[in-house]
Image (cartoon, rainbow, N blue to C red; front, side, top):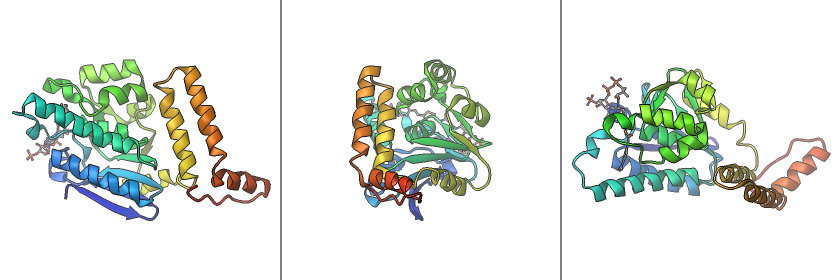
Length: 255
Ligand code: DAK
């Protein structure tokens, strides 16, 4: 199996498992990933962590060996399959964290960009090198990268195809944090910073922030008013506010 789905305590962990090809995204792997994401969506984990097998790579991008000699119709279907699969990840009911443990190029970085948050090891190297192959990104990179690092930086990365190191990725907001030590353990520690909070309320926050980037301010403020009001409808909000008054730790459920 090119995808391994396991459970570590309250978290789901997806490992891209083709280390001999630096976890490159074959179409079979993308399909396996889609099935794994369906399982995660139905499985009740508090967060999803995604990492790559082996010590070298998160994911070296689309499997270049598979991309040649295909009809344009097949290429379009391929792009739509990748986009639909990464959109599934983007829309999971729980937050996701990409643990970038080495190379994250092309489709590999696009996968990380579809996660809610990203952390990276200090030796991580990232980029969208499609231009060097005579291509542009096809799995969401042209749309998600500018939303994360801004238009000018995204254009520069896409037009030069250059590699970005971990420190620069941190500085520009491409990753949220750099980690040292065991990547999965570090991923769990990072996810624990938010995974104890109300899952639906975290979902409202994610939705509101995502909408900020494709909505005019006045519309976005209406969305925020709706979603922040909706949070009051949850039992978790009652619990959180009651716990504050009673000077105790809140116990959040999933509601
Ligand atoms: N695809 C297939 N195999 C790959 C691969 C990849 N992307 N990356 C590495 N491998 C394989 C290598 O061929 C090698 O296999 P063997 O030769 O041993 O059989 C093995 O993994 C180890 O790789 P290296 O020997 O190259 O390892 P190094 O440490 O020397 O170098 C590297 C690591 C990451 C710098 C290098 O492997 C590399 O440059 N890899 C390619 C990075 C890349 O260009 N990724 C693809 C970006 S393009 C679409 C539109 C667009 C796209 C997709 C679809 N549609 C419209 C459908 C764009 C997609 C992209 O991701």
